[in-house]
Structure formats: structure tokens, C-alpha cells
Amino acid sequence: MNSINKNDIKVFRTENSKLDQTDFENLAFGQVFSDHMLTCDFKDGIWQKPIIEPYGPISLMPSAKIFHYGQSIFEGMKAYKDKDGKVFLFRPMENVKRLNKSAKRLAIPELPEDFFMEGLKALLEVEKDWIPEKEGSSLYIRPFVFATGEGFHASPANQYKFIIALAPSGAYFAGKVKVLIEEKYSRSANGGVGYAKAGGNYAGQFYPTQLAKDKGYQQVIWTDDTSHEYIEEAGAMNVFVRIKDTLLTSPTSDRILDGVTRKSVLKIAEDEGIKTEVRKVKVSEIVEAAKNGDLKEMFGAGTAAVISPISGFGFRDEDFELPELENSYAMRIKKRIVDIQTNKAEDPFGWRVQV
Ligand code: COI
Image (cartoon, rainbow, N blue to C red; front, side):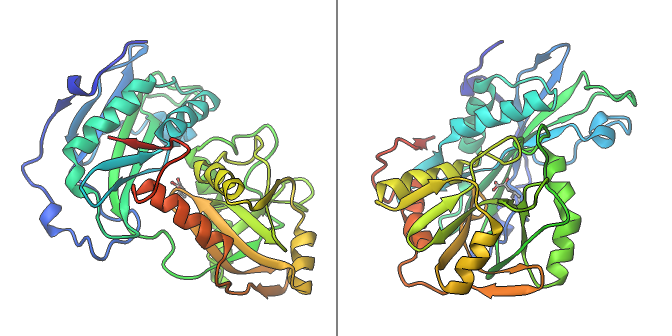
């Protein structure tokens, strides 16, 4: 595989920056896109040199395999700026490695790691003014790969495109997060693609999530596809449950995404002296704990969601409210993570990477 340095990447600058028209004080999640993107094509059996070009439409043939067979994977990351204007990423190599894990499962050619990392660094140098300074906001980074090669034959394409697009973003959830524990539909199955960040994993959730939204819930918590007795993950995040003083989360498997925030939460909880258990968590155990007052907290963890407290959940025809705690695990752990991400605290784990 060929290698690359960020200084080798050609930059084609836009003459129409949208920076001045962007309201950085009122950012939604993933709705505004920065001026430039990184693009890189796979053809003739190799990944070609990436370039940075103005963010804008791309041209594809109607027979491109992405449209027919959904060969598409992505990542989610964030860039943060500290008070001195220094730019940081959080555990970026985890995303590089996971993209290639997803690529392998979807029969997409793996991307050389330095194409991703050097490409991202070069892009962030060009786009550093797009990184919000407001607390709670950051520059959401969306690296993705999809099949551009043509053909109706149901087999892997021979051409692909890797893009990194950037979206200055605020919180993923606008308000309280109520979840519905789902028993009918499944997100993933043993031997399937659940652990990969495949676009289709998310598309498959839209319909059941819409049904849940119609009933007043923001997210679905998926249960295992065979017994529906154990919780797995939610639509946009991994899930943590606190019963009494123990923090529980499901083990990753080939059905569950190995979230970077998930594993950071576990490490920080351990560092804070919080008892954690990574084990299968029964729905009945959560319901019983909610009924007898032992269920103290539930929260989601993800790059976009950061740590999102869950205010209540629905199961079958019952609704359960969670208490609002003063010094919740969710808020304690969130502060530790965000302070590391934004260079407000020491980083004993070596997670922060300056760009
Ligand atoms: C992320 O947290 O970055 C994700 O990719 C989840 C997505 C549903 C926003």
C-alpha cells in the first residue's frame, strides 16, 4: 500500500466561503456543512491520492452499486478547539481501525491508515475556522466510503469513493430522551453486519424508530434478535444502565457496535471507582429495578450523542420514569470525557491527539 503525508495533499479552494453566513451560536446537529471536503477514489485496484476540494455535489452513474446493494460504510468523529485555538481529535485511530473493520465486512477495499489520518489533518488545517468554540458544540467529522463502480450484478464494485465531510454541530438530541425497548423488530443478527458501521444498519432502524417516535419516544433500545430478552444498543448510541451503584452495559458482539465513547465510559468509570459490569442485561431485570426503585440511571454513549441521559423508557404497555439525580454517573463521566476532549483536563489515558 502506498503512503502519504498531509503536505502532499492538493487543496482546491472555494471562492464562496459560507463561514460568515453560519450561525455558530445556534447549531443543530449535522445540518450545516463546511466549505471543503476530502475526496479519494479507489480505481485500478488502488486508492488514488486524496484531494481537498469545495464541498458540493458529486456525480455518480445510476448503476453505481451504492444505489442497488448499499455498499456503504461510515465513521463519526469530532474535532474540538481549546481556549487557545489548538485543535484536537479524540482517539482517532479507533475510528480509522473501525472503518477498515467495517470495510472488510462489506467487501470494500481497506483504506491505508495514513490516507485517512493525514487526509483528515490536512482537511482540518484548511477548515479550522469551522470548529465551534461554544461549549457543547464541536466539528462533527463524517468519513465515509461507498461503491461508485457500476453494475447490476450483485457483487462488490470495482470503484469506490472515500469522503470526509465536516459539519459544525450542537447537541444530537434537542431535549429529553425517552426510549422504547423494542421486541418485534431487530437491528442485527448473529453473523450479520451489526458490528460494522454500515449505512444499511441505520436505514433499517428508521421505520421502527418512526413508530416509536409516533408514540413519544426518541430512540429505540434494541434487544437480541432471538429471544428479545436482552438489551443491545440504541439507534444512535450504546446503552448504559445503573442498577443501585453498579453500571451495566452489554458486551460487544457481532451484533453490537464497538463504540469509542462506550469504551471510554468504561475506562473512566473504572478510574472514578464506579463498579462496572459488562454482561448481558435482561430487560426483565431493568423493569424489575425500575419497579422497586433500584434503577437509578440509564444513558446513551456515542460520538454524536456524547453522554445522553435517558429520562424514561417504555416496555410493552408500561412507561417508566427515571429519577433526576444530582450527581449522576452520566454527568460525572460526561464531564471527565468532555474535559479531556477539549483540553480542559489532564489526559491520563493518552486519548487526545493535537492536530
Ligand atoms: C456517531 O455517533 O457519530 C454516529 O455515527 C451515530 C449516528 C447515528 C449519528
